[in-house]
Image (spheres, rainbow, N blue to C red):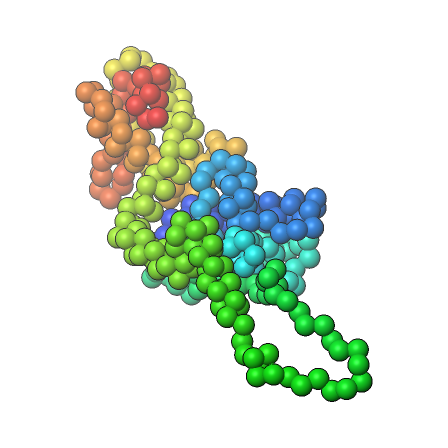
Length: 314
């Protein structure tokens, strides 16, 4: 069963599409891993494999956005043995769970309905939900275990035997030092604080980052949209300098009808605007313009040259 992603009044649909694709990719990577291994895999390896699968960089930030929608999407934990961070399915999820993606899409749609005025997709700090799996305390190799008496007489326990062995505390200090060395001299608390500092610095650029992502998303559709406009322009063309005009609404519908995959009308109009802006900024000729005539947006094109134009658009 396919569930459509609802439209948010402010946040571009592509942001939700990418998040759901990331969720599905991580699920695929984990499923493939557990089909061949009984041990858990590290978070770094999963993100690297998801990046390879989607052909775009997947980072901890993407995972934090998933947790913002579903805080129980995955179980992330630190192994005290080697200080590595691991990720696995929640305990109550089977290896192959076909309802996970539809359920997540439903959660996304619910968030869209509940937050129509939100202008950014939030995130949950990984440090706030990460778990720490305890390990059994290692036995010091220098520790001497006093043998039990084989005699019948009771053994008197001296005061010195009841004292804590100072080697326990020395070992712990050495263990903490070794762990800090593994993490570039930083303790877990220091790493969390550093991550939070970097997060605060990035928040100022979130809006711009969202715009950049959206433009990259639109650029993937530029050639297809341009080709439809180019074909319409060349049909019944009387001269190479002839100007043709199209209603943006009708042009958008023609592009949607010509596409082999579903397109969103708003995104098509945004692609047309992107083509207009790029050609206008990088061409000496006035070949592509969008004007408003009595409340109707009109696209006017002339002197189109597919080879040259696509070089500019890409």
